[in-house]
Every structure is written in structure tokens, then in C-alpha cells.
Amino acid sequence: MFEKQKTKLNNYNKIVIIFTVLLITNIIFYISLLIVFYKDIINGITNFGLINNIFLIVSAIIILGFISTRLPQFRKRNKGSIYEIGYLILFGMVSIVVSYFNKSTEFDYIVMPLLDMFKVLSVMLILTLIATKTKAFKGVISGKISKKTIIYCFIIFSILGILSSIYYVNVDGTPSDVRNLIIMISGLFGGPYVGIPSGIIAGLFKYSQGGATALPCAVATVICGIIGSLIHVWNNGKFPKTRHSAILMFLFIGFDMLLIVVLTPPYISIAYIRNIYILTVFGSVIGMVLFSMILNETKTKNTTINYEDLKLKEMENTLDEYDERIENLEEEIRELKNQNPK
Image: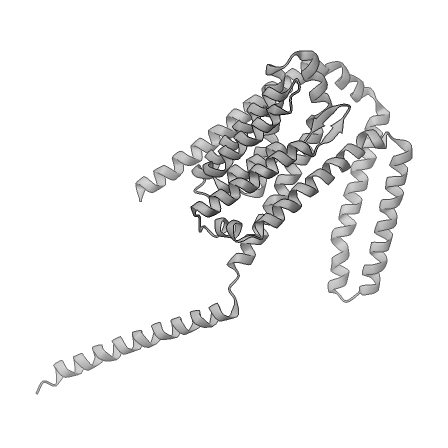
């Protein structure tokens, strides 16, 4: 028992070390950003118009989110008319907000890349969702892992890793994709036999596309598969909790950007990071959260006991009760025989 507990503690410490190393690389990356972009940061702080627009966007999101979470309560209280009118008002407010920001801010520059990234992310997640409906994925989710399921998952994630390099968002000539998201998921979900080879294939494909950042991006992809696989092993084959996987994805994107800073000339890396960092973080973190939700829902469905299983379980419990009663009766008979010997 002590040895098992010690093993778990060691595995936990190993995972903490990975998070710590990634955190340190992110700190180094942010320090380098401050050094390079300090003038832009100061200009952004003193740009009250930008601050006002950001404040309005955040306020609108909070208000709309608050209203949308309260409306279902009216439906539960059988106030359907209020529920329907409320959503009509909500949609109207969304239209007004979008129209306002489209006219008053650089909407195309700020929001459209995020929407484009969400489209790319949606395609990747839809393909992943389709894959989770197959027997092989369900087998991995339920813990029934075999060579066939591993090979199947490896093929699927390799294809998705390649597709994620093909479908990307172009920001001023700089491609932003969710390649690392797919490879991290492959490692966390399938382990080293899925994550590492998928990362190698996706990394080689990325490198074959060429470009000034091909090498650091390819290296980051391979490392991504290794990190996801190690965490899978050290976490006893369990997919991390949603918040942990989201934090991991956020930290790894920072590590990826630091590799670009180190392995490419400054005039290339600065423009690259300026264009895609926030967009890549958005797509990768949101994608990880959504995949975790899909995975949790799939696990819940797989663990749901149907009626036949429930009846079978009930019959087994009844048989156990009868066996226990029979044993008690046999014991009473033996006691009676001992008390009244012939």
C-alpha cells in the first residue's frame, strides 16, 4: 500500500515538474515580450479609446452571459412566454452590440480572426467528435485498450494533426492553427503509442511545408506529443480535469512561442508572435475545454447502466441475499444438531 502511494506521489511530482518547467518558459517568454513590445504596451495603456472599447466588449459579454444563464429558470417555472420574449430580446441585443462594434472599432481586425479561428476549431472538433463515436475510441474511454484501438487512434490523430496544419487562419501572411491542440489531446488521450508518433508525423508535415518558423513549430509539435504522453502515463491513463488540461495548453503555447523566439531571427519571430500568439492561445485553450466537455459527456454515456443491466444486477443481488440466508439456515441447523445430539 505504501509503495503504491509512493508511486502516485512520484507521478504527481513529475507532472508538477512539467507544469513548472512550462511556467518558467512562459515567464521567460513574457519578459522577452515586455522588452520588445514595451512601447506598444505603453501606447496601449495610454490609448483610452482602446481601453473604452475593451471595457464595453467585456461588459457586453458579462451582461449577455448573465441574461442567458437566467432565462432557463423562467422555462422551469412554466413561464414560456417570458422565456421566449427574453431570448428575442437577447438576440436583438447581440445584433445591436455587433453592429455597434462593427462601426465603432476595428471589428475586422480584432474579432474576425477570432471568428475564423473558431471556424477552424469547429471543423477539428467535429471530426474529433465523429471519431469518438467509433468503437475504438469508446474502447479507449472505457479502458479496453488493444493494438487495434491504439493503431486506429494513431491514424485518426495523425490525420487530424496534418489537417490542422493545412486549415489555419492567415493573419497578415502568418498562419495560426490548432496543431498543438490536436497533438496534445492525442498524447493525453491515447498515451505514448498514440501521442508521440502522431506528434512526429504532424511535426514532419509541418516542417515539410517550409517557412522561417518550420523548424521550431515542428520541434514544438513533437515535444507536445511527448509531454501529453508523459502526463497520460503519470496520471494513470486518465485524461486530466478540464481546468488542468486548459492550463497545460495555455502554458505550452507560451513554450511554443519561446521556441520560435530562440530558433528564428528577431525580425521574423517578433512579427510572428505579434500576429498569432493571442489567436493561437484562444483556439487551443477553448478547443481543449470543449474537447474535455465532449470526452466527459461520452464517458457519462458509456457508464450509464441500461435497463437489462440493472435487472441483471438486481437478480445478482437477490441471489447473494438468498445465498446468505441459506448459509445462516445451515449454521442454525448445525447448532441445533449440536444442542440435541442423538
